[in-house]
Image (cartoon, rainbow, N blue to C red; front, side, top):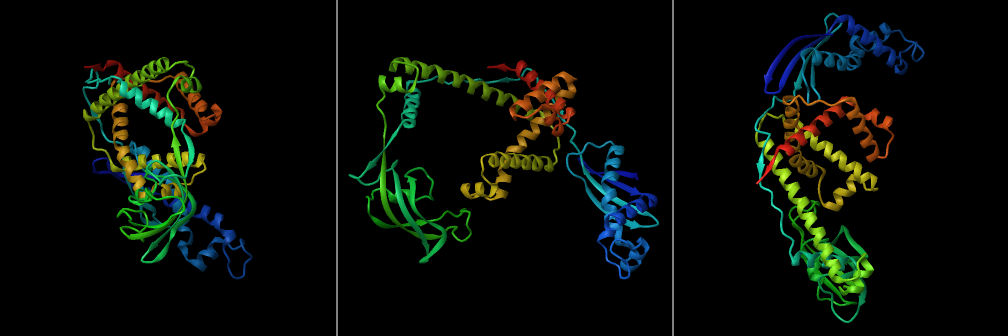
Length: 426
């Protein structure tokens, strides 16, 4: 196997010309024959006993060529990439241009490489830090949230449904007089005003009383996830069985004693304000850091291959699927619940991926410029943290994460600290 030529065809794109010798190709053909022979029927021979030459005469000389190429090309490509000294960011594309017993195999391999990155003025960045003052109104909102958290649900039978109530309803949807799939349920609990149903539905339940049967006219959104119902005018037949109201507890000393370690309203309010002030400070720090790293990205120059954004978006989608799976939710179910298509989710992740990829490239360049390194001990400590977070054994983590990759992450973390510690608030 050998690299015969390297051509730079565009920014971050190279075309490698790679050859597999006739001798090496013959080894691959023989290996492919040995793997496949037990599955091949040849008249006059028991299965698996036909010689290779007989099989090639029966099915053609090239019967094993494709399998042989598939066996050989991964190593050939890896060796060529290493010989060319390329740092790839995506799986290379392989085009086999010639296959013969006499000449072996010739391929053109298209590679996308890590971009050249330049970054400047990353130390001593100045950014505005704003700590929002906590007002009495903020404290009152938190108290209302706590009251909502401790709300009592009571049956209501002396008034019509209003916004915020929980109603129990039967419903069935019709388009052009025909019931449509997925548009029917019985004894369904719906909180009015929650936005759980399409616009116009919940609002038209308001004002109706227990025992009423009525129709609701609605129009499905143009971006609804069902092609049949996009923009469609439909009618829902409703029967209202129950109305449940929310009764908020009084905010007094008794409430405080029941829900906290404090005895009086004044003590509780003071504690809420202290906590909100701490949250405001933490948010100010977070926003300040975001401004710093936005500046780092703004001060970076690089022609970044789109595949880096695509790959990161796919990683994020896989991470989402893993989190959902741990909760017993399939990705398809998640798409149905959220009304999104898989491609829409990938697009959303790609938007989020772009700043992440840019920042990572900038930080890796800063690691290089500042000669930041990581020790084996630091890498080991980081692996222990990962093991603790995922409740795994250290040796198990090491099977999935290379030590060098961990060291890279440690170095990037040091670059983050370097930038943060040198930044100035204004």
